[in-house]
View 1 (tube, rainbow over the protein chains, first blue to last red):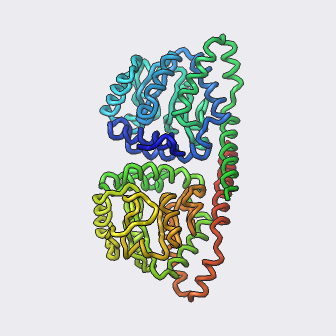
View 2: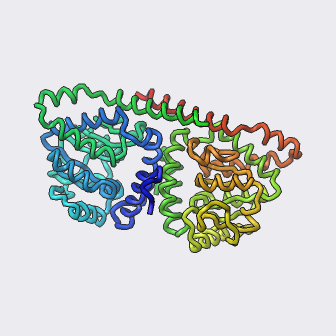
View 3: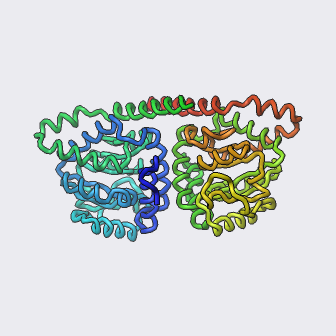
Amino acid sequence: MIPKSHPRYESLMTRELIVEGVKKGITSIQGLIAQGRGEAFDYLIGEKSTESALHAEKAAAANLLLARKPVISVNGNVAALVPEEVIRLSVLACSPLEVNLFHRTEERVNKIIVHLQSYGARNIFTKSDALIPGLEHERAKVDSNGIFIADVLLVPLEDGDRCKALLEMGKTVIAIDLNPLSRTAQYATVTIVDNIIRAVPNISKFVEKLKYLDREELQDIVRGYNNKRTLSRAVDEIKKNLESFSDMP
Amino acid sequence: MIPKSHPRYESLMTRELIVEGVKKGITSIQGLIAQGRGEAFDYLIGEKSTESALHAEKAAAANLLLARKPVISVNGNVAALVPEEVIRLSVLACSPLEVNLFHRTEERVNKIIVHLQSYGARNIFTKSDALIPGLEHERAKVDSNGIFIADVLLVPLEDGDRCKALLEMGKTVIAIDLNPLSRTAQYATVTIVDNIIRAVPNISKFVEKLKYLDREELQDIVRGYNNKRTLSRAVDEIKKNLESFSDMP
């Protein structure tokens, strides 16, 4: 057991949840490596939601509230780390969930669906009867009523190729990616450079706050958002942290 | 199969080797997360041996050549990624190997020993009859003829607490750690901020080159090395890379 007083309690607990996910068969082994990459970048942004992350999370909430057909994509890491939080956001933002895996097997998709249902998820697209154009078959599979026709997609931890293919279908893509330099981060409409354990509850908070605004006001938020500028502020935060680290005695 | 032409071939192959290591039972699941963290930092230093890394690798070689009792510590990631290279360095620098694990089980220690022997390793300390003072029992276990009495230790991917405990025993600790800000990096006598797949062969090259020098000349190299300065150059390299990334179109 890791004591709550441990200076790296949150990071270590997150790691335990991911290892747990692998044991349950919902997280892939590659998901562990992705977790490690995320840890490194989270460390570099200071393991907190930076101002630029909060700015992107607000824009994400506005986009979800304006959507006609929003969908939240769930992979093995999201299911292991934030099952309750992603279901809560799904309900608040009227955005059904759909399981979408980089290393897709039907077995793992089904395990994740059952896992989400055990946490109370009711609104999940479960078919795989449509294909995203331009992707290799297994990774192209989506639900014809879900991701395939969605106008706004929240994709935590998406890979670059698929992010690009989804954008080419004309969708608004909100990515959660701790690496502000990744291809996904560079391509997405809105990139949230934050840990999913903080990002998902933050988006929920903004949804609750913004849901009383009218469409005009929401559109102002969306129009006022500049992803390139937000990413370069995220890179600046990392540089600033590196400087303070290198001042260490 | 990943084609050799893939822009991320080396990084992806490394990942496959680690996953392979987990399947063989020589790499821990936590080792995968460590691999991911390493990938992120490797990406930030440009996935190459920087000038400051080469400088540290040269100092590491000089330290090993001057040692009366050098030992190379091997963990599950090293065994999975660079078994042949670490054995080659062990022979060139007359430094026996010793398996030392953060998540220690006798079963995994033995599997790694057999794995290294299958690659031709002959000189391995295999007892666990001494304890490093100040560490929790399982993590303190070492060979009384090996790490316990070594004067110079090469510890790829060591954890901060143990690095500190080894230094407190009066040893020279050469760490290989891609995160220049980690506690291990800050504590070690010589910190090599480089991927072990490049660092280990690089140290071997320096050993081959420096072995003709006399002790005076080797001592000059050791005395002329400043770890704090080398680390701050490594941090500068990352900042420079972040700048060029953020200039991307």
